Length: 185
Image 1 (tube, rainbow, N blue to C red):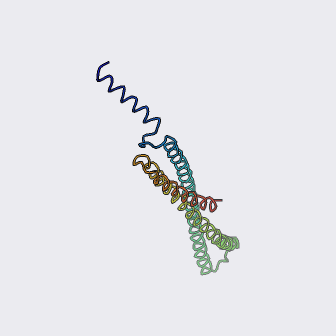
Image 2 (image 1 turned 45 degrees about the vertical axis):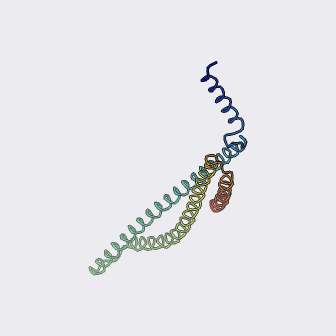
Image 3 (image 1 turned 135 degrees about the vertical axis):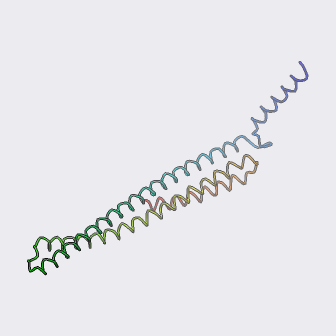
């Protein structure tokens, strides 16, 4: 056996021992598995938070679109009322009686406007709540992402306290996610 073959064999044995012991200079492979498991859980929670943030963003967008449509209809109705009132003034000036169906239409539009105002107030409250929930889910997703990076860095720099810091960040993110879920439901 040549000197090169012997060196390769020693290097292979050292590599196998290193894998068996973990590459942390004497640390255990179970520590690496703990880091991997922690980052996996944090990644799942980050994905859940991002999904919920996306859902609430869609809800906010839908609510805003609905509000714009309602406002457009209200403006259209108001223009219709103004046109009818102008028509009534012209008819009155000409000495022609105002058609009763025009008066009924104006009254119906004004009643609908009052109902619309109440519905818009409720919609604004719902949208505000959805915006707050969206923000909470976004914060949770961000904290989970930072925690994943910190926990993953623990293996690279061989510092177990970074895993603990990543885990602590994950717990904080989990608490914030819980608050968001409470608001969501």
